[in-house]
View (tube, rainbow, N blue to C red):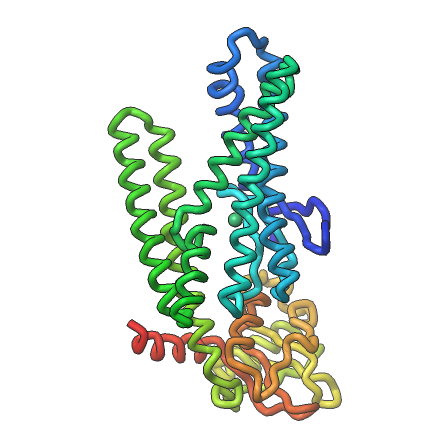
Length: 374
Ligand SMILES: [Zn+2]
């Protein structure tokens, strides 16, 4: 699998990644600042002065976006949520939440920290700009002003109460604090998010009709992304809530077959997948202990020459983090399956294998219970 990102480094225990799609937005903002923003304020600049100043503005701006994300993540980590990664991508920055916050206060504090950071940076840049103007430090003046404006825009845009934007999360956690009902708070914040995304799409269409094609398209793309992530976030919140009420023991299945380690892919396909009409299997060592998980999807794309190789290359080794206990909440199984992209997980009591939890079954369980929330 080709990686779509590269790692910048790990700071304060949180990994900073850049998705390749980010270069698109970097180029777009640099281009806008260099050819549009700066020349309209500064008439006498040469081409290379514009480029240097524009790149400086863009780099400082994205450093501010990273600061915004770190503010979210550091507060979250202090409050016991584990955020291990921040990714810059085409729509800005994202702190990777392992799961929804457990309480309203945590969500409120960690969310407010982001836009607050952007607004503080905007304020400090504006102050620098005023000082630079006062002391006639032109280079500083040229750079600090757009940095202030861009951070102000990011701070304010994020405060729009459209879930999952920061403002929407602030709205949700506030309602959640008052009503003490996570789902109904999420539903209200989601509705606000959907209304906002449709209003944005309409704005985009008006822009296009008025002749601003690129602007309009860009607004529509962001609105569409927002709309999708609003729906996805709601579904995710709903799933977490439903699965937090049921234990693994009641979703346990004994419909599983084990595969001995070391067999060939060929044997696996014929003697297991085709024979048992199952896709996912537990792998056992010579003592019969479960050592891993093998899924059909991991070998289904192999070409002929790989059929004689051992399945071991495609086995997900069983670590402690992948083993469920019968009294674990189903939401834990759901999170592990999502983060490791697995379709089955073993349930064990000590060393004893009790059965498996199947993703398809979790999905069906959710489907049935979701009907009751509509
Ligand atoms: Zn934010």
